[in-house]
Image (cartoon, rainbow, N blue to C red; front, side):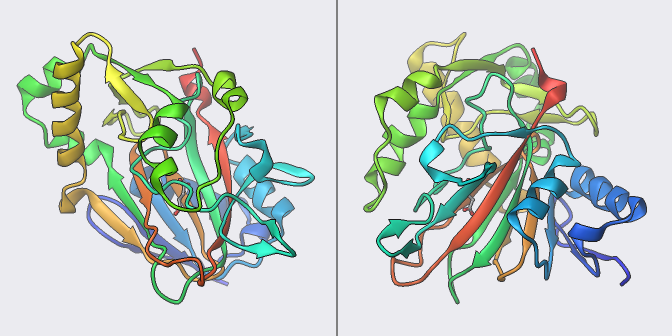
Amino acid sequence: MTLSLRQMTPSLGAEITGVDVANLDNQEFDAIYDSFNQHSVVVIRDQNITPEQHADFSRRFGKLMVHVLKDDLLEGQPEIYRLSNKIENGVPQGRPNAGQYWHSDLTYEEVPSKGSVMYAMEVPDAGGDTLFAHTAASYDALSEPMKSFLSDKTAIHDFRHAYETFSKRIPGTMPISEEVFAARPPVEHPVIRIHPETQRQCLFVNPGFTVRIKELSYDESDAILGYLYGHMVKPQFFYRHNWRANDLVLWDNRSLMHCAVGDYGSEKTRHMHRTTIMDSDAKK
Ligand code: SIN
């Protein structure tokens, strides 16, 4: 097999074919790793992997994080978070409607995430795409006064925010207990973060988990965040992934936010496994 790479858009996205992630040599892994840093979304087609191989491949990027929603983890493989609307013998096979709002994974954690690796096992014949928006490209396009204004600001992130603001309004969403929310109290991160590997500055706020900018009044924070969210999803910063079964997609949570599109209804199955890699460079 020969690795081949096709860039998807000028800002982000690359498609890789001709590799088997369960049997990568160092050169192939280095090419994937470079592409992850350079293109932020890497789509690796035609993978047939077990949950263990999925976790092993993900671990080559860094330490894996365990999602706070314990009921949605794969039994025996807790690094795998199941996103699924599939029900087998009356038992849900994962969290339905997960991530249907703009966010970066796990920004509500004290140590946030470096990236995620999602494996598509069953996908609808149409719909269920994932949208990605590049937060370094959108930062670069800001004016110098706006960059300077944001440079010393801090944002508060809270896991509860996404549930209260978005998820619980979607029919079929499973409730989340107070115990789970209590396990993830709000945290603070800089509004602008420097990507440790590309050295690019990235906007690090998202509608899902960012509650407010701490140094501003609530009204001022709403206005600035509202402006930024509109700016960050301009089409030129954007890639839309249309999933095929057996796609393995890696994305960089340091330089992206993403949103799952919930347009396929309950008759169509969308069944995915995701790992989340810790951003050890962000350790406080
Ligand atoms: C997520 O990881 O937030 C969900 C992405 C998706 O299901 O497309």
